[in-house]
Length: 207
View 1 (spheres, helix red, strand yellow):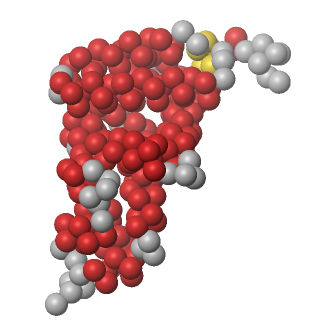
View 2 (cartoon, one colour):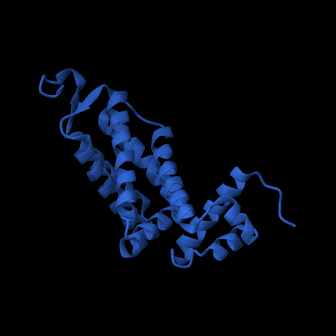
């Protein structure tokens, strides 16, 4: 007998099951049948919640990026300076990585799979979502500390995402959390070089 589960919960369980399968076996192995088997649901439950497998993959990406953004924003932010604010966010991300490596493995698998097989630029879309989140986090940090950025926040966000990718890959390889936090400190210091008190904004910055 199929469990009576609200659609929202069933959706969350299917997404979680997809993340586990992708992290463990790769995107190619994450068939509809494999995902519902992992979730302990009948095949019909999938089509009731998601129209296609692609819709589920997009939901997985959205879930991963939303959890990352929430972790960085909801963590204990030290707003005593822009550097400590950024570092707080980066350490919150590292905490999430350590607590749930499967989530980041799934994200990497999806990105690589899309690079090889997606004709519609799915990897680019995934990357752009990360950059948008990076922009929001940098703007949030500046707001908390009463500072402003001296160059394009989008450019800084791109560098931030690249640094986070590096931290993620290195940690997945060696599981050295202390080293990951040292890299995060380096990243925070590097980004801080492009920040100044908001009172120093010039007429040129305002336009």
